[in-house]
Length: 243
Image (cartoon, rainbow, N blue to C red; front, side, top):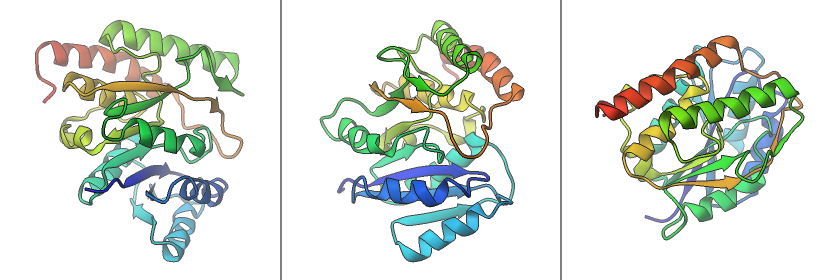
């Protein structure tokens, strides 16, 4: 199977960012397509995505009628990708906090004979590489990753990051119907499940720049979910119940 990548971009009210992020992704590598997964954005993001799809066969749109959260959006996108002949499936944000220029690095690292089966863009692999976050948000993220690593034993500096490249085989091995988390704990759970199945995890240092347009989706519920989810994952892993 020839190498083809799909960049899954979940959106909710990203009308300012989508017209810029789509061309920025497409120009990185001709082997990359885009799937915009829009959760019924009231600001017209879905309509903008449709315009791109009509103009370019490399752009696809998956419309969802309700806002069900980040994890559900990604799983829907992953399922869509596995029904087609993509060899590499990416996840990234629409707000330029994840630099599209890193996509070729990820694709190379996850290619046959490359560095890993799941490539993770790490904000902390080479120091702290975060721009424009308030100190409170940075400390929350840094301690959350320390906490997640302590509980789960994941061999990573950044288990909560959402800039990733999965080889097809990784996602095909994970039972989506058993994935429980939906917020930022989703990132930990998917990586933990891949690791427990023996796939190679590799971190590539990235520079994370906080969004300049739109609003962050972080809230208290997402934080609470992540706190208890790492314990659930570790216990399920210990007793062989992850599936």
